Length: 238
Image (cartoon, rainbow, N blue to C red; front, top):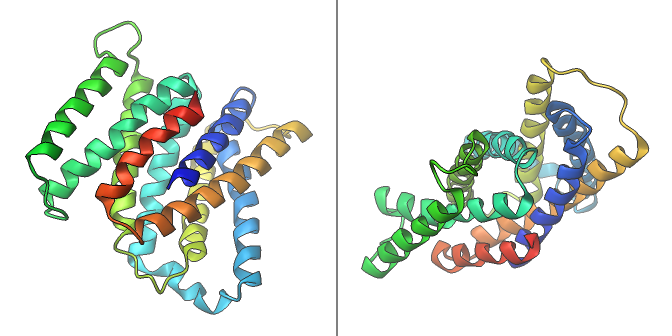
């Protein structure tokens, strides 16, 4: 969980560098193609080609659909917000996840955890400052992304341990790349420079590793233990 968060933030740095010169849809497609190639190669090396059918399981596809929404809202936000501010807003994820756990009776949420939720929500309000000059529509995109992350991670726990993490990541990556194609329909694309290609290749490697670590974590430990560790990404972002 700790290293997964770190790799996600390092991916964010490369993506933010790329968004300064490249349309979002083109970015998602190119990063996705790099990631798909990487993941298929890893699946082949590890002998998991026989498990490829699991990539079409409904719950795996549902997780991938959530990941697309995470990516679209997050990339839109990161293009306009400082990484430090965006990362801080994303810390609403454990709070949202706790609320979902209580509402859908996934885990028992006692009074101390509810108090922590309200305190955490107060912290998010201090960061986003609704009504203040620093609050923009991109802050809402960041909060939407945090909500989709919570839903995605709860779905991850429901995926059978018989499905290898790299199969889950492959479906997710394919969906994300397809999202780039949809967005790109309204964009003007140009040939990326070698530097831009290097940013996206590096981002593909980092986001693939981060996803694998997160899937493994959420299928191996309780949400209550893992969620607080998300706050360490603030250190990496800083």
